[in-house]
Structures are given as structure tokens and as C-alpha cells.
Image (spheres, rainbow, N blue to C red):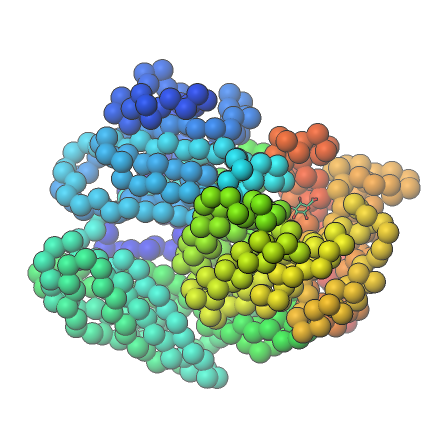
Length: 562
Ligand code: ADA
């Protein structure tokens, strides 16, 4: 449904995609008027997955809105209802009962509904994309707050004893992998004997166990000979978990994994012990026709273009991209740095009710969703926060702890522009490598990259630097004789000079250009942004290459033949 492979063979999966009834609710009266019991008669429609902000009627609409549709079950069933992404706050009712609520537009949520009867059912979702003082991101963050059920929604019928999830951990010794698979089992009835099996590629482990009522975890061990996942040969292994209960009812859960290590030295990020020259782009999920809900063809053609430029990495600025996009990165050997959407928070913002708690949950959900992707090499905690302030340092320490508790196999980072703003970054002590954002030659000219990098290195001598943002705005088609700002040549020249400097600094492990494509910006920022876009894309919003695209390609081509 939402992945590049089948997540179950046994379960009946039913898409909730397609046309839903839709009403915006600018005065926020829907709950009081119980739209979940009686939906307004004059409703419009919207497609799922999709965003209302690409349809002319609701182009600028920010606020609550309601969706409704029916679905039909062929037989009595227990159902798992999954939303891959609702931007940004969701409340869900089924047949008038409130069954789920979730905050955060870029991570999934699901709920289990036991004892659903055969026949027709109604599902209603309240979606709210308002940005407020406690939202993540905040008002004014530099991307458009597209609202809607922007990723797949589906349901699957599950037996009373089912596989809820699997967590794979492994140790590598050369080509040998020791795998531990922790299978989470859900049992909605009386205790049951179960047969479990886990296979990874051709290796298989089996166990019998007792599944008590409720949730339980059963860990199986396997050893196998593997080929490592590398950028050049991104070998993947299918993971299948099967369960049979004492009545002989079967369930399964499928995933995919690649085996590799990620480590950090003082000068580099390493994959399988080898330093990687990271050369990449920052990618927002954005397209004029689809907003955040870019379809799989665009995900793949984005990766085609990114690879054709010679790049090997994507920073999914500033939020977890679609899980299928990560599947494609796994398949192609494209590295990913993933981030949660804390964008320019100061200590006052972090101190507001629920802001830290929401972020901790988003971080946890991102790691739980994406921990098996070999392409994902680091978790980024935030972007351009006020890292000299006490409250931000404390929040960072907490977030780093959460990330490491959930996953000790990947480094943790954050994107800092604190030194660039002239302050001392006190948060970097809590992370493993530095992601550095700066815009010399665009927003500021008083220093240059060379001097600046040397200064940051002096302050953080034990951590490699990934230049996570640098760039210049270029209006597509703007070609002048003198390469002035906003022209394609200015952008191309700025990128060449910066990249040449990065290559000369042995502690710079790589860079990700800001940004892949031009993106629609928040209406509050639009007055500072020509065409109401962030125009720093090396391709336009419709993915037409600018001069900078070809320049990056040329530079990477020269670099690879050195
Ligand atoms: C920041 C920010 C980006 C974008 C960029 C810009 O570094 O992290 O999201 O806004 O600036 O284009 O100014």
C-alpha cells in the first residue's frame, strides 16, 4: 500500500484512497456540531492521498477541515486502521466513535478496531494544518503547511492473534550477521500457544511460545552469511515474520533490511568502515500539483535526477519523507539524513506546553518507522535552533537521549547555524557530527566559507562536518551578462566555489545543497520570496534543471575521475 513491497501476504488489505467528502471548518464548529455523526450535506470532495492546498478553492486554506467516506467489510473482522501521514493534527471517528488522535504530519499512526461487523462503516477524520505557537513546525517556517490526508490510508483485517511489529538488530563480523528479531504479538482473546518464524533472506528461525492476552514480545535469533549493503551494491534482504495460533490461524508481517555499519570518526562518516564523500541535496516533498503528496513516479524521477547529477545523499529537510521514498533510496544506495520538523525554535518555544513532548514523540515515531532502512544513516534532532540558549541545550540533550535509547546503531546530529549567527553553539556537544548551515555569498558576505569552516572546526575539533545547507536563490530562466543575484549563473558559481572549499577541508565529510527543487513557501514568508517560492532549487518546481544542476553534475564528474 505505502511501501515498495508487500507488507503482508495473509492479511486482506483495503485501501482508503480515492475520493472522500470534504468540508473546511474555518470557525472550528465541526466537533460541537458532531460532524462525526452527521456530515454536512453540502460537502465538497478531496482525493486521498492529497492536500487541499493544491486545489484552487482551498489554495491558501489553513485550519481545520473534515473528511468522510464509507468502507465495506465482507465479513466480521478485527481491523487495523493505518494512516501513513495526516498533516498535521488528526482525529478519527469510526461509526461515530472517536478511535484515534495524532499530532505530527510526517509520521504514521494506527489503531486497532476489534469486533467490526460485516457491512458498511463510516470513517470521519478531522484534519488541522494550523500553525500556532505550539505547533511543529512554527508559523513562518520556510515551507508550505500543506493540509490533508497527504499519505496513504488503509485498513487490514487481522486475526485475533497477530504480529504487531518486528524490531531487527544485528551485529556484523565480516560477512556474518547475528540477527536478533524481537516480534511484537497482539492477542485480543485468551492466551494462546503460537508458532513463530522469522526469515531473513534464506535464513530462518522458528519458535513456539505462549501469547498472553494483550501485547507480548518474543525474540528469535538467526545467523546468516550476508553481502553488505553499500552505495555501489545496495543488497537488500526480505524479512518475513509468520505466526500461527493454536487454532491454526495464520498471520504475517513483511519488511526489508540491508546490512551495514555506520560510524563517525573525527573527520568522516563511515559506511562499513569506509569514509563516504557525501554529495547530496536537501529535499522537501513538494510539487505544484501535489504539494506534499508527491506520487511514486515523482519520488522515483526525483531520485533519477539526483543520481544523474552524481549525488549520493538526501537530507530529508525538514521532516521524514514518505516511507516509499526511503525504500527507493535503499534500493539505489542513496544515503539519507532524516530530521524532525523543529525549525528555528528558541528556548521560549521549547518551553511552551507540549512542544518538547510532541517532538520526542515525532522522533520516536520516525525512528520506529525507519530503523530498518539501511539508507538512513543519521537522525537529526532539529534545524537552526537557538543553540546558545540554556533551554535549547536542555531540549537537545533530552532529544539526543531519546534517539539513542531507541537506536544505538546510528549517529545523531543537528543542523546548526548558530556560529554563523555569531553565537557559540552549545548543543553540538550532544551530537556525533556537525550538520552546518550557512549562506555566505547569499545572505551575508562579511566572511567566506574557508575562514568560517576553520573557525567552526577549531570550536568542535573532534567532530566531522557535513555542510547541510548552502546555496543561492535563482529564478528559473534568469540569465544575465553579469551573473548577478537571482540569476542561474550566480547560483551555479556560488555552489562551485563553496564545493571546491569543502573538498579542501579534510574534516568536511560532505555536503547537501540547499535545495533540490524550488518549493512553495509559507504565506507569511512569501513577501520575501520571489514567486512565493524558495528559489534555491537546482531544479525548478517542475524539475527543470537550472545551470546549477549541470554545474553540480560537472563538479561531481570531475571529482569522480580524480
Ligand atoms: C535555512 C533553512 C531552510 C531555508 C533556507 C533558506 O537555512 O534551514 O529551510 O529556509 O534557510 O533558503 O533561507
